[in-house]
Image (cartoon, rainbow, N blue to C red; front, side, top):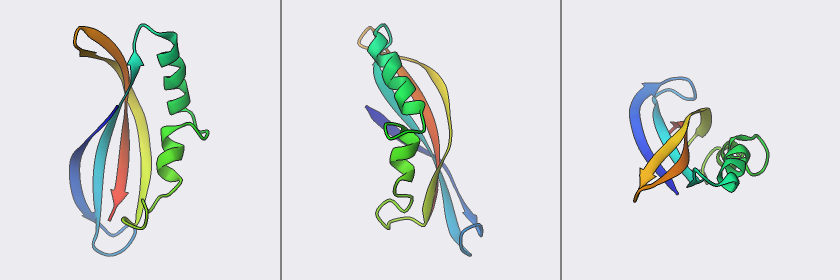
Length: 99
């Protein structure tokens, strides 16, 4: 499961005059925290290989020619989230999008 929230928008001249920088926090819920498979999947998502979140997003940095570029700035906040009395393992990614 993936959720997204936009944290802010600013104007920048980094990519082109008048570009708008949007910052998103993506929360990826991996699986039940008590299962070893969820930890293994989390390791894959955090890696730089073909199964990683960074690889998936940055494989097409224009997101199908919709934006100028996007960059996965960081991965942080590895923790758990409670859903229906079950703890799930989750990680947050910070993504910068220039439009």
